[in-house]
Image (cartoon, rainbow, N blue to C red; front, side, top):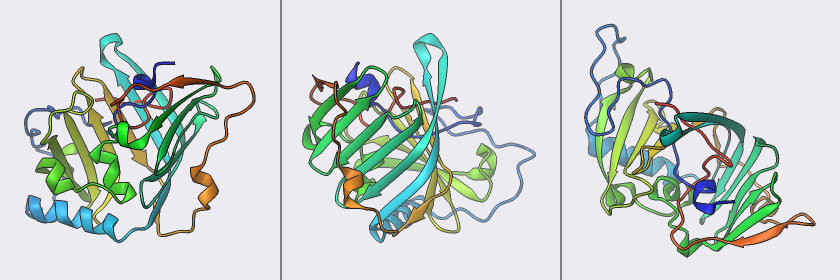
Length: 248
């Protein structure tokens, strides 16, 4: 199992075909009118404030991962949980029984089909800013430079899209897109694009915040017969397609 492939970029962009990762989208002549956009700095702060006030987050998700070099797209489903500080638990229905788990100190990536688990210290994992603000770490304003676009022009009515460029160069994440519900400032979709043009998209279908999550959900015990493999330092970030998928 390649850990970097198993744990790479985050986030979304599906159904958005008119967006360049380096330039603004072209407005659609038929896009429905939407509420006025907030200033980009205010929009980013609203998102940060929402998650600063959230101790836990959980949702079912649909993931698409596009491997650009092979022009192959894979779809996955499952549910995810986050809790402060730095805890997360991705449980996959497809691929069945795959998991990516962090207790805030250790990160486990379990590939059920191959019965392998990669283990890494969270401090060495380059857990991306795109995820870290969900787990009570990171600061969007410090980590990214953002632009804001009207959601109606990007097939995301009722919201807006924040397109972020990391302030510190990172080959595992050259652009991140947050699709934000304008009424709540909650991220409902995300897309992370890496230096090779691979795209990893997540749609959070049933988001809930500040609901109880058992601490045991953020621990991992390897099933009998599991082989442990070393994870490279500074491996990519969030689940990819041993757990992932995306489509431009």
